[in-house]
View 1 (cartoon, rainbow, N blue to C red):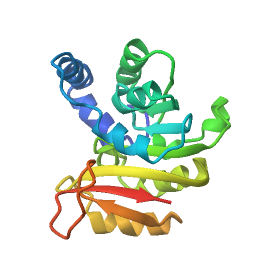
View 2: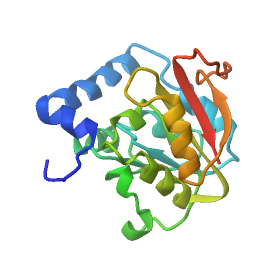
View 3: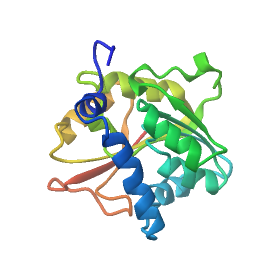
View 4: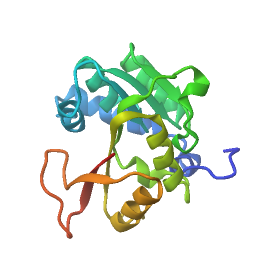
Length: 201
């Protein structure tokens, strides 16, 4: 890692270089066994017009973005881990998969100039960001959204990023929480929920 402020994911893979490959194979195995891996994509799809533009922020090996592409949306996925992006390209051709830190997100600089109708950030991605970059990530989300666009962020409790801290960061980034859920299948959020799905606009 050459960056001065590596993400927590990069820190994890530096300690255990095989972690990324294990992660890819875990989801490939689950898919082969018929596991339902499309819950996040179903919710996001219900929020979108047909043929929308979606950014899969922290896309990993492309699980969520690929499902949205299969439903007719144009998907760009970005992840800091080149092993995961290589897997996304191999398993889900047809979408755009890019290596990059979402704290430094500047897609027009790499030729992706159109804004997005929705940004999805699933799989606890925000808990793996570089410490102190959370507000900047949310600002970059806002900068990449089309007018009226939304970001949907999902992560669990007990991972070092308290929900109240996240809500404060959302406000500081110039976004607002439009909806809070406790699951990707629309269960309401409560004070004791151990998972958050936040729709931001």
